[in-house]
Image (cartoon, rainbow, N blue to C red; front, side, top):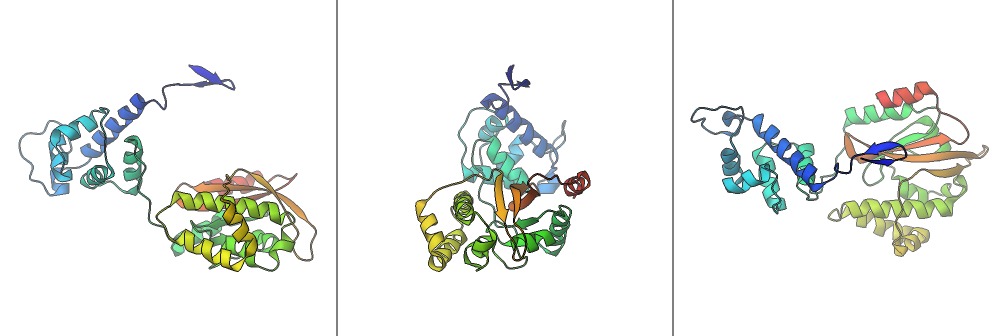
Amino acid sequence: MASVDGVAKDSTVCSPKRQREALRHFLRSRRARLSPDDVGLLATGRRHTPGLRREEVAVIAGVSASWYTWLEQGRDIKVSDGVLNAISQALRLDDTERAHLYRLAGVNPPQSVPATAGQTETSRLQLIVDGWLPAPAFVVDRYWNTLAANQAARSALGVGAGDQNYLAAFFTEPTARARYLDWDKLATRLVGQFRVQAARFPEDPRFDRIARQLCATDHAFADLWARHETCDTAMTSVRVRPPGEESMRFEHLILALLENADLRLMLYMPRGAHISAEAGLRLVAS
């Protein structure tokens, strides 16, 4: 055991052997939950264990029984996207399980289709950001379209819900440069973050369309986009001065939502102040 900052660290956690063991267990558990009737097969012979046999999964997936057995045994073999996709379909995996299988097999999961937030999910997102009051909070989708914003975000940051794109508004709204006191610094950061986001979905043409439109609309964005710089989503300081009010300083944190990785939760914490424990608990509970 190694130790980092006094915390024990198991050096084998991320080892290939540990990963192959996890792959073996995952495939066996997914196979065990299915019956021949579930996949349209006629059950034959006496079954000593529940679920499908390895040979049956191989037939449905269109691979050899030996190859599938090697995969489930955790042998160090090469796998392709096409084969993993066929196995995912054979085992009736949902999107989350499918991505998990790809990662355990050492392959990048296929790009997900942009998820859209329905009315029910939008209402839930609104409850989340309202739970962060009195500080600003809002939610954006994959393309930085604003899906929900609380009153503090609307008044202090000028964020609007509905069809507003936060990135486009930051560069094109006349009041944005006056509102954000460190506009140049923040602009560089936002473009770098958008560049990283676009790289996550290289086959999605909408990012290029958004970038081309903003390049044609705003010279500052065009200059920053041409630099091809990248930026992380670590916490950063933001100073704003809403029209007719005194300046405010926030710590800005970006979080991904576990239920929908396409969505980003933008939280602003007043500098030198603390969000109440009640507000924090409401946010976590939601």
